[in-house]
Image (tube, rainbow, N blue to C red; front, side):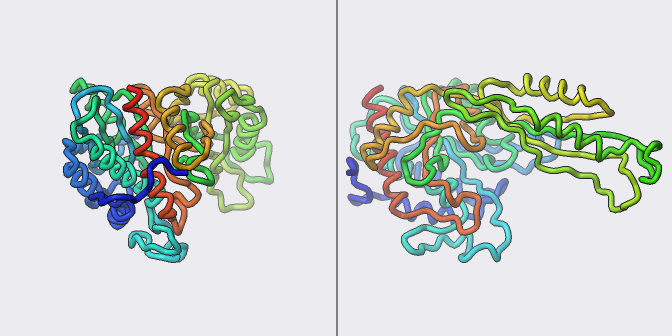
Length: 398
């Protein structure tokens, strides 16, 4: 039974229409295509002060970067400052033949809003803005605290000029976030079945091994780099990292590519390369895993180079006010009790948790990043109701 009836009343913002308007902006990272202008216009209409923040620092390997547009909006000057964080950038659509509808047309089919970004995560942004309107309309005399939104255009990319930079900007101006909800599509099968309270860390290793090229008929004169890299990868993949912890799955190392580039059948290669990714729990840090990998590779030997890219460390936000209020709101609207989970990939919560307690909750993620991405219209309505109920509970408890 719903405590807050969805789509009831003469609200100025319809979450489904707003989500559709956002979907029609093909904001594939790093392009904005006016998506954040739409968000800012709605928020300014609700009395939010909006800051358009553009950053263009070089990427992690020094590569040039196109300017990234971000938005920070706030209504209120008091505390607590509850922030909703999200992103308007989306992943590419992939081959056109994989889609049964135009990815950026925002068609409605069989009760679903269709298009790239519908689930990840323009639907959630629209739902939160609509929920904020309802929450504020019920409090014409104001409320104690502030509501803010941190919306980036760099979540699906390298995340250099997005949320992290906005957080640095906030710190420099002395502005504090007291709690945060990230609107990622965390629901697994049904809306409200899962909240994320942490994430595994992620790091990528790029392995290069040098041998001695030569004719396969004279093996005593070669040092086959293909054989070397197989042995090195065997050393990395045959030992379990751990068995998991209370809130985390076991850490996992997965080889993603092996590249030799040797078209000849009678030449032993002199160089071989491989890439692997480690998703790790709170038993590890990127530093301890680098040491672990170095020890494993040293035991095999050879001329080896290993370069690392760390996307984020593992983190856990123990159950507390944010996840408690979200769970209560989900229960009131859907009757479900959400699982508190740390599964899945990384998100911008990896930056936010160092600033304030954070939890992630949003739509059902079954079609995110896929062709024919879509969200049930009923889910957008219920998500709006959940966010409104969450705002009620959070500020009532503050």
